[in-house]
Length: 102
Length: 180
Image 1: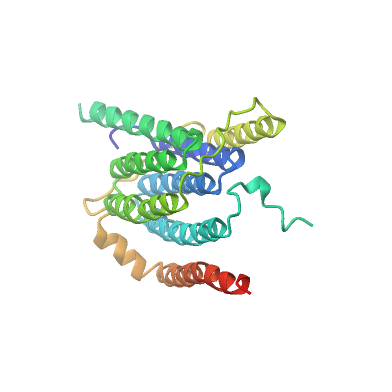
Image 2: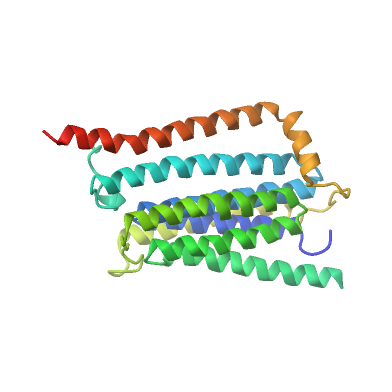
């Protein structure tokens, strides 16, 4: 293959995943947490596609497309919850959602 | 020469990818975060093209950059100006320090696992044909080897669509309950 080895792609995928998890853990707005989850999913997708290229078989690409569909459904449910929060005038701050705390 | 060009494209796409990911998690306003996520998705599509995944790159731009991000921007506009606190506001708390430590340990684990299993390099790159990653070959795999995953994905999408409708209509019943 011309250009960078697959290890470079996997390292980039790891850094993307960590960046997304940092966003999930640090931020308090549920919208930005959903966006960070998208970054984590994209990191996993990049690893899948890099290994698909490395082994010369498209199985990884098939699963990357499945991950995309799962991400779309996750966004639908997550945004539905956020809109429901907005309509009930709940403050959009995950630290203040304590109703379910025992 | 071709090798050099691929390296240049890779470095540009990887830099854009990391910079936009950092921008997503550090903007105060969710609107700008969503806009920078579009840049992240576009640079990832370039990386997928370098890896021979033409169909996945097109799907990434269409499904993510098109449908999902439009939905995000619509919801952010619907909710109005809900600016979050900046992540660095109020000095470093024990929560943020622990978070950075946890994220750093995940990164260290990824790198150590990669180094231990591959010894730093994965040699013997497979040779691929011209049709690698084309819609025809990916679609054939979907309908033969991975038919179960395909069908399960469709059921998940159906359940998510029903869930979105239920969550959206829930607010109406709440208003009716609150009226008397």
